[in-house]
Image 1 (cartoon, rainbow, N blue to C red):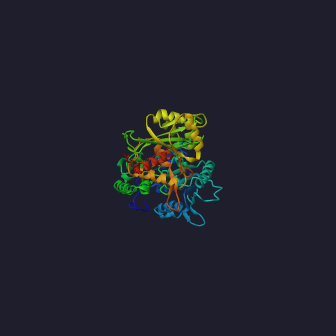
Image 2 (cartoon, rainbow, N blue to C red):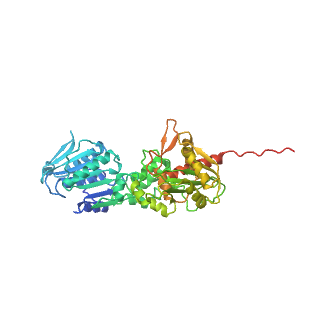
Image 3 (spheres, helix red, strand yellow):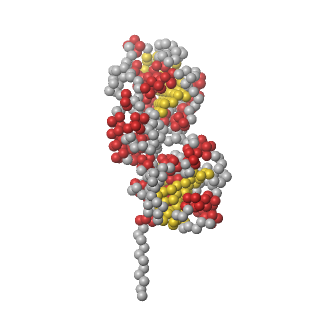
Amino acid sequence: MPEGPLHGQNFSLAPFQEDFIRGVLAPETMTAMLSVGRGQGKSMLSAALALAHLMGVSDDQPRRQVIIAARVKEQARIAWEYVQAIVLQLPEDEQALFTFRQAPRLEISYEGNGGGMIRAVAADAKNLLGLSPTMICEDEFGHWHPDKGMQLHAALETSAGKRRAKTIIISTSASDDTHPFSQMLDNPPPHSFIIECRAPLGQPADDLAGIKAANPGAEHGIGPSLQWLQDQARVAIQRGGQALTGFRLYSLNQRVSDVGKAQLVTADEWQACEATELPPREGECIVGLDLGGSRSMSAVALYWPLTGRLEVQGAFPQKPGLADRGEADGVKDRYVQMHDRGELTVTGESTVQVGPWLRQVWDDLVQDADVRALICDRYRQAELLDALTAAGIRVPVVFRGQGFRDGGQDVEGFRKAVFDGEVRTAPSLLLRSAAADALVVVDDAMNAKLTKARSLGRIDAIAASILAVAEGQRRKAAPLRKARVAWA
């Protein structure tokens, strides 16, 4: 080992590393992907594989070319330095066959066994045409920019066919299911080998089994110890917010929104709202409504401020089908799962017909609830009023804007209710997905409003919930009107 607590000792591979190396070297493998938590020796493993290939250990074709690609130049330099550090552990006569160059490009040349070269590049680099690699290593691909990073990935992917280069992708999880790395793991290309180690969702951050699952090297002296990770998890739980999100993303290797983005609520904050036994449907009921178009989801939320009970249901038109929508949105069969769980309905042909859908909602979901108000975005005011009339539904309607004035008040009211434990809902894949994808934009006065333009997926269910919960909290906080005294 060139550095760290085990400096000077021979490499001792953990079982998952041995399995991955065997998978990489298998003749039929063309793409190998490894996803584990931070500190599990990913970059060092990538450097060792690159060096072994350069020296002709795993491939003896002449003039070998290894491309190590990272998100930025600084990360590419770290990978280059890892290779250099391993070379400096070799016998001096072997070291003499290597030439290291840092300008104008990060390169390592090798003169033995047919020769070859390693080049370290950044994902935002330009003018990389003419590459003819025999091995490609993409470091932390899950955090490459979806546009610039994919341009380099596409260029390397097309160049790999020239000399049948193997592609090795080693990274922590991307922050959502729509990132190219997530999609490659979920829908792997032909001749792929995959090892993905991440903690299951729905468990506390300090759950030891989850920590072990995402950090398979910890029990073998690789990276931080299990005790240290568990201590860090408890610190993150106490701090909450971005500290907890960051721990889940990097240490538990879970697909949660990046710490650099303004989340509506974190995964743990929303998980605290879920309950297997819901409070009763008591008191007045507030209905929140988010109307979608042909491509968007429509959603309705029912909230009882007195008990905190929240029920939400989404709806898509029949065309295209749920499976096709899931593929187009990069979430695979998630919509089909929501439908099977009763959280998502299908209605209408190519668009959700608002009138018939609301009638169905009132018959199946609202039933005998004491609905005091229906809250909706004022953008589709005329359409909603016509639909309510056609459906024979008589209920007071409150229209809310989506700017920083109304939207900011609603987001703040919703967050406060979540933090105060005044939102209780059944475990719902629909709501959990929407809450994980929902982002807010903040103005100069620190007012936060929901933004669909920057959010990562279908957030209609959480948008409807915000309207219902915020209105319910306003009515709950309003002072009771005193009865007038009757004079004789």
